[in-house]
Amino acid sequence: MNQNNHTWVMEFLLLGLSNDPQTQMLLIVLFLGVYLGTVIGSLLLIYLVLNDSQLHTPMYFFLCNLSLADLGLSTVIVPQAIVHMLTRRNVISFIGCAAQIFLSIISGATQCLLLAVMSYDRYLAICDPMHYSLIMTWKICGQLALGCWVSGIVTSSVDTIFTLCLRYQGDNRIAHFFCDAPILLTLASGDIHKAETAIFSMGVVILLAPVALILVSYGAIIVTVVRMKTTSGRLKAFFTCGSHLLVVILFYGTLIISYMTPKSSREQMKRVAVFYGVINPMLNPLIYSLRNKDVMRAFRNAVNRK
Image (cartoon, rainbow, N blue to C red; front, side, top):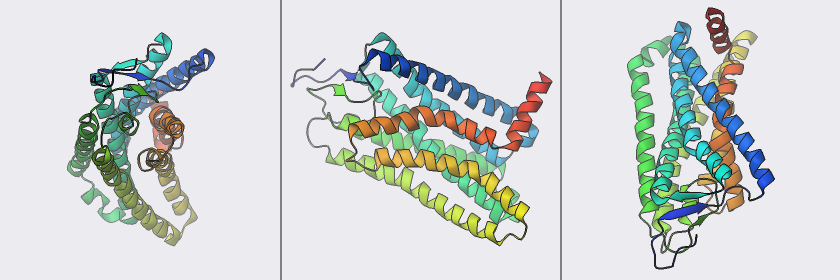
């Protein structure tokens, strides 16, 4: 699969996670189970929010958008990885690789921004409840969600253009199970400094800036909760924010390791990618559902109606 050094690469060979047949079979079962869990969990959560009037609130509106982004990220990565392991033909075209990079970054960047918006929503609900309904109107919620998706598209466009405008000649083997911009840069011919700088800069904007907003929001939330006089009020506030905070830690932690530490080993990046691209999209619906009394109530009502 190696190309001649003077020939433009037209396809890439994804080396995957393992060459061992038994390990690959285990990975197929794991990936398939996790993907089905992601699809069922995300669609079920969206269905419950749309069909239960008590869930028609800004928090659940943003949660629906987060579920769509989770589903998009998982769908872009997992099915193709399963097919490659089943057929043992790990080839992806240049156009296919470009599409995978573009779509996966859209979903990932949108999730980053949605989590920041959701933390701001929780800040207003707990720290300024009197003005919450005046600030978080449906018009504002729609604009915030649209802004997250548009920003994700812009970020993805920048990263994809800088990555794919480089010359790819010679080695076409990608030490990964899907096309990821930082990994692909290692195969580029010539100077990749501008592309690395662009990807790192977009990472600062999409990863670190939302993290700063989340930290500020939760700092204010903690101060407000500590000042509450009743224990029940404190527990309710922590319970409301606990699910979101857990998702934030899991998602941002893995992405920062992957995109903000350029010297990470390829094996480390593959392990991190399995978590944020395969496991995490399945965990989000579970975390928000199992720890949320409103969602569980809506689920029981839906089952009883059927």
